[in-house]
Length: 146
Image 1 (cartoon, one colour):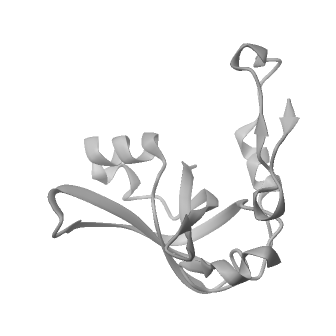
Image 2 (spheres, one colour):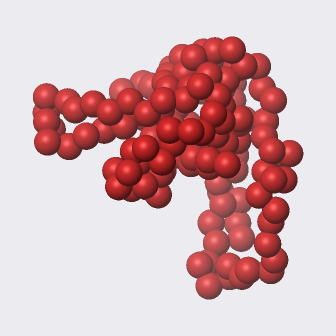
């Protein structure tokens, strides 16, 4: 494994797929112990981070407990037949709204949107994307419903 990240992408590594081995199991209840306790997500309350402020970050991933979440479906004029989904949620009393990139969650939601109806809390892996037009967008990279 080689560390290849720097700055806000400090977690990035490269490795050979053949080097991955299962050496045990992890108790899902212990995931709560891994959650971050940051006052703001990636330094601000917004959906994006401007390119000139990205050097203030030294991480691009975080695991948080989120409440009052809701999936928002929408289409755009340029691709009207393809639905996009976002997740609106509350973290530390602040309302956030990020695109969901988690393929498993998206598929489960597409198959049966009601699977989250009775869930009050989720663990979210959030990430900071690569720059697009001078902005780094915040994303929901993973959703764990307990």
